[in-house]
Image (cartoon, rainbow, N blue to C red; front, side, top):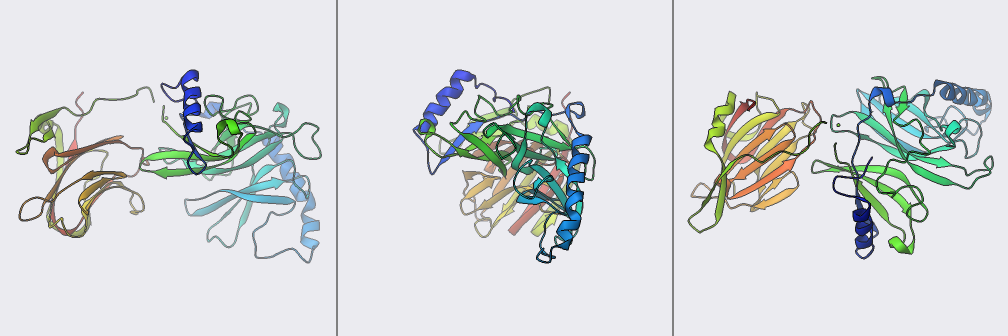
Length: 418
């Protein structure tokens, strides 16, 4: 990660000074940008993985001979484990990672062990996933988590540690958070995104490692409203408000371009003197393939899919229950960006704008433009608008309309202007 756009060193210091006086319930906010890694930058140490595997194998006979060893609780084949990390489900498999010492039966030499299961009950042990780069001065791969990037690809994050433990003469030092990516489609072999985790911390503005007064560690992730956040455990000092939980937001940079203009709009005043903004009618020139649904009731997945679309929907009796659209919907319906009209407002996947159903039929009109990572929504002819930047998985292309009243929906695939 690098510092986000517009945040130079002085601004970051100013941000920290401001945050110090505005700590609420131990939460702090900082910004970061996620830099993509190419296959050429991924470092996989097969020899370290082999040695770790041998270390575990040597102790298996002893472990099996212990009559007190549990038989239906998950544990490593042998040796010390702690802290489950980065559990995720993909392609029919539950994956679990965990802190592992392959060379002893107490804490030390921390690697990440790995196992998978079809049913979350019976497990298959896999090769060690993450190893400490001891030749670089890294001695432990601390706890962390898993997250999907904007294209739905999985990555692991761990806290790099130097020293600590009876075998190391130097005190514990926390070097930073390190990203690890899979090198195969079965998630068996993993590679680090930096050759030197000790000397290349990857959070911005010198806010990693000891910069807060002690350490940052044990990352976890939160996705909401199309945004991705990393939350870290931290021991701080009075200078930054004591013990806090820093929050970093990932900003894509997975690109060769940045920013775009909103759609051109016609600005008018309604009968009450309120400004109204509507997309220029000439945008209709871009319309291609069309699908329409009349007198919709309940919910329906439309036949047309895509990520460059114009959608016009009119919902009647919208003062009762809820009505709306789910765009960028996954095939199984578990993911989507929802625009919901309910209770006097329209929620555009996390941004709420006021809305009043109009006329005797209590109608609400939505006019939505989806252009890859940009969504613009015009409510009731443009009396209210919302614009959002989104990053759903690339394969989520479906559209679903739903209503507790009745509705009409039209969808067009949109052509390029170039």
